[in-house]
Image 1 (cartoon, helix red, strand yellow):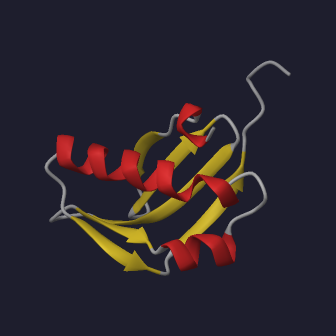
Image 2 (spheres, rainbow, N blue to C red):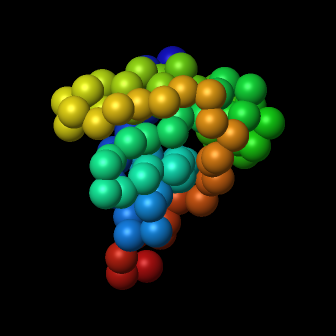
Length: 93
């Protein structure tokens, strides 16, 4: 069940929002100055997602929407700007 995957959201200096989970990281566009987040469309997610991320779009989108609302940051859907990073190894390995 995909709802068990929890994403943590962390703005990064390059106008990016890192959306990390235990399996990896999705990175979306987050403009600074006047903060806004450009969310990927389902189609963009499915086109670019690696195998670990492919089934997680709805869970990701729901959690991103809640995070943006909690931080009073406008969310604009339909972007094609997204890339994925593999999960990081725990420190000390």
